[in-house]
Length: 184
Image (tube, rainbow, N blue to C red; front, side, top):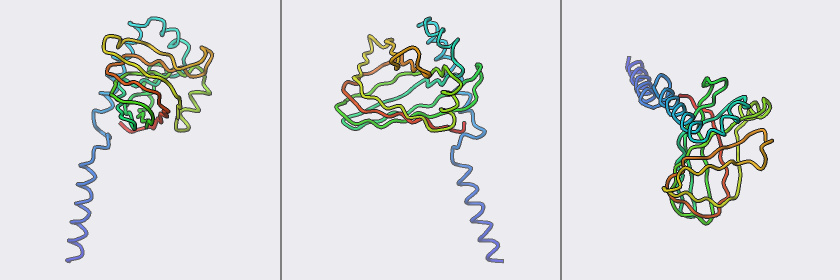
């Protein structure tokens, strides 16, 4: 009888602990991300009408409505967004990065990845996506609507559009962003 009571207590405690964790299942986190994605795409297309040609050519779009980045020598960034195919959300993703280099400050921005080929989209969905680059980054509140395309040519199978920068971060960094599928 004592063993049965202890097992029931331990089982109940484990169930309560698991239920208390915010794993996103059954929550409204997905709806919040979708609303932010809609607002981000509306802003992008109305402010930068030239990006609609990328939308029209793409087979999938990963939208990160808000990435927060901070660093002082060492730094990092995090954000959550959604992958859309034919204007429907198919998966949710987080974007994380760690940075090292001459940097100081904090910044927030949005970015959208346009997948222009089925192969690029399939490769992204089947494996973690890493994007490594060394660059100089500047964002000022009065120039917060600068836009940058992270691509050497328009013929690239994936084009990243970065916009809506606020805050200040300056310096050369070696940065790798990893995208992970999340449950929301």
